[in-house]
Length: 487
Image (cartoon, rainbow, N blue to C red; front, side, top):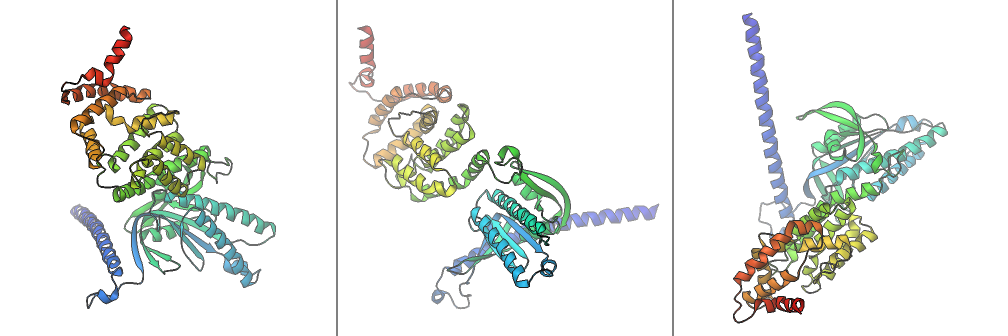
């Protein structure tokens, strides 16, 4: 009995030690990643310095550039069967046919803006989110994999109809951090390293012939849009058992061809663009932060964020669909981008920037035209014609009915004053009262949220104004309205 107790005690001690070692290993891994990032940062800095200016003893600028991506999706395709097929064909013909398959893969990869990494012998690898970071890369890679699978399926049918052997192909996908090394000047090539690459190859090895096997990381990111089937677990070094899933098809409600589920429909495309909006917003806000003039105390990137958020809020309040929300948020994002070109007519300049950028993000011409019409509706005085134009106008002037109206309106005053477009603060307050008195919100949602507080703001500003000998009612046109009613 004592021996058993001692054995249990030793086992428990070993378990505790193992837990401690695993915790230390994870901590060291995090530290190592940070050191790698710092090392890459300094290497890239050195790469920018001319060799003749480098201090003695410091390594010359590296010929390659290394970057780290926190989220990339790697597709690894394992191609087998060369020996089996070459028994019935000339080796050169077999290689030509394999080249034809790989060439078609290249076309699919290019279509989904994925980066081909390399083809080495019987392996093909590509990655989404490299070299351009984007949030949609797991979806892009999965869509590409489905097209590859469809192409291979049709090719296999042709081979079997002729009584010929076909390649054994297994596809593996995993999403995670990678280190990418860029090489070359005229034609840049990429090499990936890290656990993500290794796990993608493990996913391919654990797959069945002709199937797409993805890790749980990729599955969690794409499961709202795709049907998948649980495929068990696989041990992964330092990560324990990792769950795997077979990719089956696009969900029926998002599929253009409901039977096969290979090609996305318009509903899917809108969902995709909404998800992609995060990348677009990051790029536009970066442009605004870098290029907007310093005197724009009101029309800055913070105002743009505010209008984007309000457009989404009021849009849902008005019951518009997902595509309308996308159009509203995109118009809000670009509605003040024209300030990077000029203050006056900035709405028009914003539409020009939108027309330049949005085709690169797969917006249709029809969507871009409507977005530009929504942007132009924000031009003062607002005269919106459609519901979406009314929503953007209420979003743009949402601050009129908020508790922070006075500090926000003061930033607009400072902005106008910096350009000699306004006189004293007292004059500005008079203009504000007149504008607020004449203004009305266009949507039921904005009226219910802001109108009461807007009226309170009018009374607050009136108390700040020094009217002198001037009659406030006459200035605001209230006196004339009273006289009309009395007569």
